[in-house]
Length: 147
Image (cartoon, rainbow, N blue to C red; front, side, top):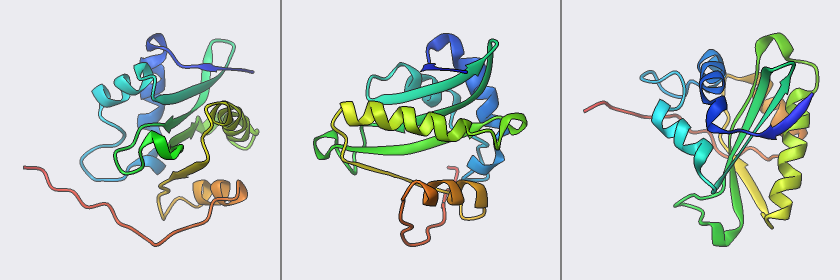
């Protein structure tokens, strides 16, 4: 298995994988991140987007945002935005490998705090992040309205 930084060439495959991952549907209007926003995250130097691949097939990816208006970079924070593993390849340690490789890269950037959101109904995601030492905060629900 190869872990590498995602590029624009990987966009379509990564986006399709994101759309298939129901655990990340945080609102009823979008299944995943908006297409243009996700594409910009691949190009943005303030984001860390790594993918796991084998035999030219993307097995999963992890995205950390390093620039957040609520927690600016000067505070050395990173937001775990997405951790996605293809259904067919789960329970093989891929999420752990992606996470560990990301942590190495974040430490080199002197990141001190990582945080994120996890869907309350997604037991697998919550179990994984608890295993990594994350502490749960208060419960939030996503609210949204189209204008």
